[in-house]
Structures are given as structure tokens and as C-alpha cells.
Image 1 (cartoon, rainbow, N blue to C red):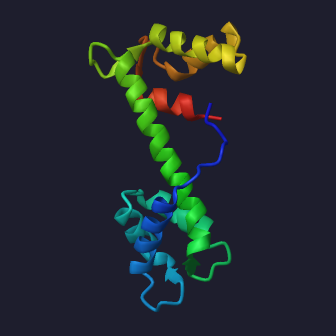
Image 2: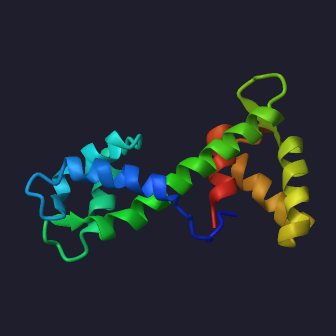
Length: 155
């Protein structure tokens, strides 16, 4: 369900990221140590879990030099921003569906959403049923936000 489109950054966003990056570029050589990437990400509002940070560093520091320059860093940060934006979109959608503020939606609510998407994505009723069965593993007819978000952002 997740989209593969690129995430375009505004010049202001790029400048903000560059400023945050430059704070950690102590030597002024255009590179920062990968061990400082967690601090940079937190400074930009992205609190990564330890495992997520390790994966992020491995992705950014392809050559294993222990440093990263801004051009290497920017595409990954743009992806993180898109993910955060996607999560906010789905949180808002979930809040709309969770009319009684119970912290879950029913499988019927989910079916309604998936049928709407089904026309656009050419989902059959059988595929929708399979998706609902997968997300509602315990069969209680309730879908939490985490389950909903995982389903909606899966490939």
C-alpha cells in the first residue's frame, strides 16, 4: 500500500537540514562522524530507536568510512520525513474512523476503507478479506492503529 513516489523537499527544509548537519560538522570539512547521526536526527525531530539508527547509519555510510557528507545524508532524511508525514496522515484517518475514541476500529470500518482503495488499486473482495484476516489475527473484530498503519504502509 505504501507509495514509492519521491518526496520533494522545499528549499527551506533543505536549508534547515543543512544547518542541523553543519552544527555537527566540527571540522568544517563537509562531513560528520556517523556516531553523531543520532544527534542530528533528534535535532530534526526524528527519534530513532537504537536498531533503526544502526540500520540508518549502515545505509548512509555505504563505504564504511565512519563519516557521511550532506549529499549522502539528504535522501535518507527526506525518506524519514515522508514516513513521518505518512504516519500523521494515517493517524488522522484512523481518528476519523475511531468515532467513539476506543483506540481501535472495527473490521467493518477497515473493509469500508479497503473497498474504497480497492477500486483504485484493483483489490478484489477476496484480497480484502485476506488483508482483514491478516491484520485481525485474534479474530476480535478490532484493529489498533499500529495494525492499521502496518497494513496501510505495507508493500
